[in-house]
Image 1 (spheres, rainbow, N blue to C red):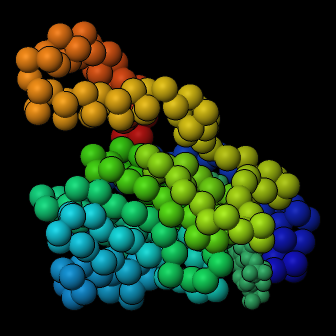
Image 2 (tube, helix red, strand yellow):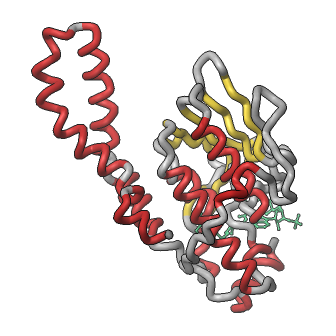
Image 3 (cartoon, helix red, strand yellow):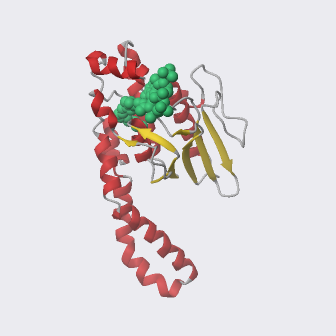
Amino acid sequence: MAAVLRKLIQGRLPALAGVLCRRSGNEGHLFLNSSGSTLMQPRCGYSSPTESVIVEMDKATGVALLKLNIPPVNSLSLPLLTELAIVLDKLEMDKHCRGLILTSAVPNIFSAGLNLFDMMDKPNEHYSEFWRAVQEIWIKLYGSSLANIAAINGSSPAGGCLLALCSDYRIMANNPHFTIGLNETRLGIVAPFWYDILQWRVHHPPPCLHLFVMALVFRLHVHHPSAMTKVTRAYSTELKISVSYVKQPINWRSHEIYK
Ligand SMILES: CCCCCCC/C=C/C(=O)SCCNC(=O)CCNC(=O)[C@H](O)C(C)(C)COP(=O)(O)OP(=O)(O)OC[C@H]1O[C@@H](n2cnc3c(N)ncnc32)[C@H](O)[C@@H]1OP(=O)(O)O
């Protein structure tokens, strides 16, 4: 580990940070793995072919538990990002799935962030593909129509932290040995501009809380229609505004950037 970090700090890391490549438009691969075979058959209806993302679907609740499973540290390599993207697409299209919980199958580690070896000594084409895959995960997780929660059951530096920020809610195990944060700046890696958007959302939770309140209001409305009609009307405009804030970067205007 120390040797890798030293190499990066010595300046051999290509100036990739913050580079946003264009989407290649090859979304047709989404239901194939990197070697071209179809996937996600076994275990409760889903699974990635190499089990690098374990999916346990609770059919009773419609909640899928996704466990990153690339020891030793769940670093976000191109194959892992690709498989995660495929799983997310599959869940998104599953009409029985209502939400997902992203966690880790590796003890004490949620994710070590981007795979450092994917960011050094590789041809430029690889960097394009890699950063496209990184963006895809952000777009898919942050733009997901499913409720998604990050259950951070271990250390989660850099891209691991950003992965958690993409979720709607974060819950972290209370263990003083678990670290989280953006250490990559020490390596000279600048987080992409859209990190600001994630940070903004986490630091400005009112729209999310608002949605939560609205969900309760609507629930009451179902059970006590007459009492709640006025309240519901008053909040309906607010709800629209809240929704637009919560999913802000996914509206057509900002999405256009990635085409
Ligand atoms: C979805 C949106 C993403 C947007 C990303 C935007 C920008 C993000 C940039 C990055 O993520 S850059 C990556 C920065 N990450 C790090 O610097 C993490 C460094 N790692 C650690 O701090 C620790 O390894 C750990 C995760 C806290 C675990 O510590 P532990 O003591 O349990 O294990 P180690 O002995 O340190 O490591 C074990 C093994 O794993 C290899 N490794 C660790 N991190 C990475 C990594 N990021 N990529 C590739 N490989 C990694 C490490 O080299 C060890 O390997 P061996 O020496 O055993 O072969």
